[in-house]
Amino acid sequence: MKIGYSFETHPLGTAGPLSLVTGLEDTFLVTNGDVLTMLDFSDLISTHLRSGAAATIATHHRQVKIDLGAIETNGSNEITGYIEKPTYHFHVSMGIYVFEQRVLPYIREKEYLGFLDLVLNLIAAGENVISYSFYGYWQDLGRPDDYEQALEDFNRLSPKIMDESEPQAGN
Image (cartoon, rainbow, N blue to C red; front, side, top):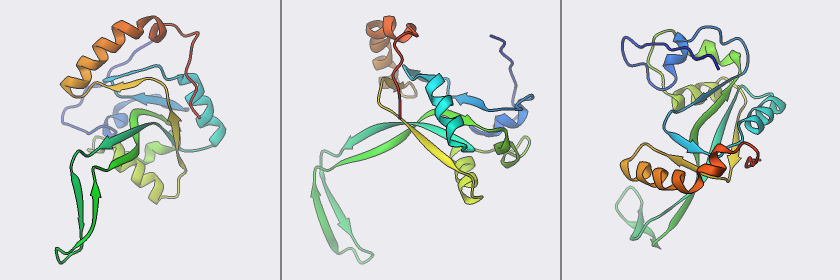
């Protein structure tokens, strides 16, 4: 595998550095470097190509349990609802994206741009952006406790993580 590097002279955000990468002439994959997953990248890319979308975001289902009673209020501080220890369900970005070359004009050279802003700009411009739901193993390593969990998981799951013969399909 050939790996190239680019260097930022000033922070460009999570998507802005793509303006520094040369040779992006076809479909390309972008992934955060702090992710441990058993995602089948081949299936992700195939799904993206079949969709005709400008961008595909790999997503994972997460639930967030609030261990307190959640109060809902209106603009006058009147209580309009009370939910005891709710659990909220979200599809979160896994930090793994597939893009078509046509997204590059949305990224100005050497300007700060996050993936959130890029995706919102694509949607506002009428570009098709899709989600690829993945239900297999995924762990973000951005927080110390997540990193510790990933170390434990890797030791336990390394035969499966390193074995390409057992991919976890998405959609």
